[in-house]
Amino acid sequence: MSITTKAALLRAAETQMRSKGYSAFSYADLAAQIGIRKASIHHHFPTKESLGAELIKDYIKRFDATLSSIEETHVDPLLRLRGFARLFIISANEGLLPLCGALAAEMAALPLSLQGLTRAFFETQLDWLQATLNAGVRQRNWSLDKPVETYAFMLLSSLEGASLIDWTLGRSTDPLAGFDHLLETLVTRS
Image (cartoon, rainbow, N blue to C red):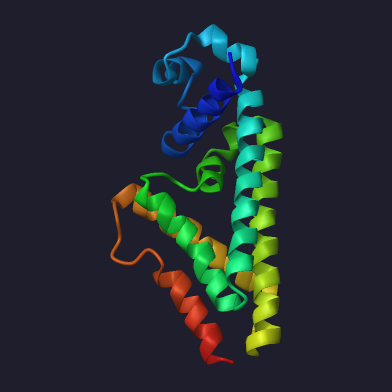
């Protein structure tokens, strides 16, 4: 088996995880989707937990690169935040939940190692949002009436929550309404 097969397995597992959840897919699903035997999957990933861990680590690495790209593209913190929000729209347009939301929905059923990675992924996003909000305070004179940590939590919650609601009920009229309202509040207070 080549690295291409391993990459195909990770891609297929990501789609399964973001559309069905970690608990709802099996190696048989992956084997059928890719057209290989289940035993071949075990060659690359001896356990489903090892597959999940590598998938989450790879996803976080790609997500971090995307955040870096947003920072390089946009100096303005407001545009950076809007770029971050677009990532959730892209997921919705692909018919997928954000990975961290899909994992969080079944946190109690995840192996401990995947629980830790899921928490770390959320922390990474919150840290990035806090740094971006702090830049907004410096560059745009945003006046925060709550700690920056609270605003970061509200922004991420509005995106994750909208993703879950859209997933459950179908497309909303404006999945970014809550997020945009929070941003407008920051802009008008500057």
